[in-house]
Amino acid sequence: MACYTPAVFTGLVQTTGVIRALSEREQGRRLEISAALAEGDRILGASVCVSGVCLTVVESSAEAFAVDVGFETLAVTTIAELAVGDRVNLEPSLRLGDALGGHLVSGHVDGVGQLRSATARGDARECWFVAPEPLRRYIAVKGSVTVDGVSLTVNAVDEQGFMVGLIPHTLAVTTLGALVERGQGPCNLEVDMLARYVERLLGFSNSNEPS
Image (cartoon, rainbow, N blue to C red; front, side, top):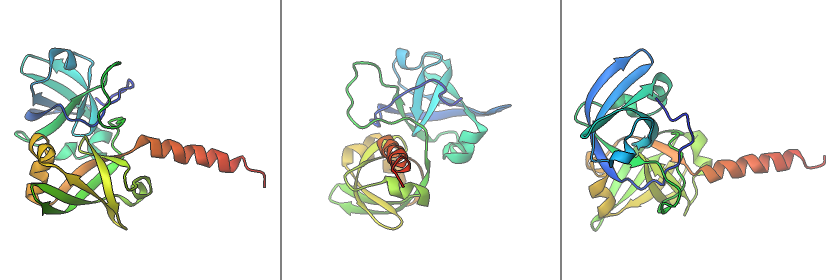
């Protein structure tokens, strides 16, 4: 199931997991994920960000955990495209007192983007992504964006989307390395939640102005 209780993440992937099994359910699909998450991070009811999607642990063992994904989430994210053997980015929810190393991430995907190009810059990669048109106004240079659960800083924008730089560490420890190797492919996008709050606040401010 998706996260129905408030959970916050930072966009700093803790580890990757491997899809061990998939099964269809009345309410959607169950994913069984092999991963080296700490026991406290995979207890029943815990929230885990799976490649950018906040999901709730419904089963857990020493080697793996399971999450249920509803039909709506399958329809609006890349989770439906996962197959047995695929890797996913994993991050447990933020706890009070934890360091906020990335930016505030809800795990509620705003849309699916596409890797447009990846250019080598030494060992790093300069990557352009196409973003759905409704999301582009929320993406600004030097702002934050989440790509498959990874917090990234926007280096440039154009009429189609945005560009980020991926350092060797990010390429090595997240699934973005495999995405770059493929040269194209879909990804889950979440814009900075602060941008949405600012837009909402400005909307109220403008509506209250005297005519």
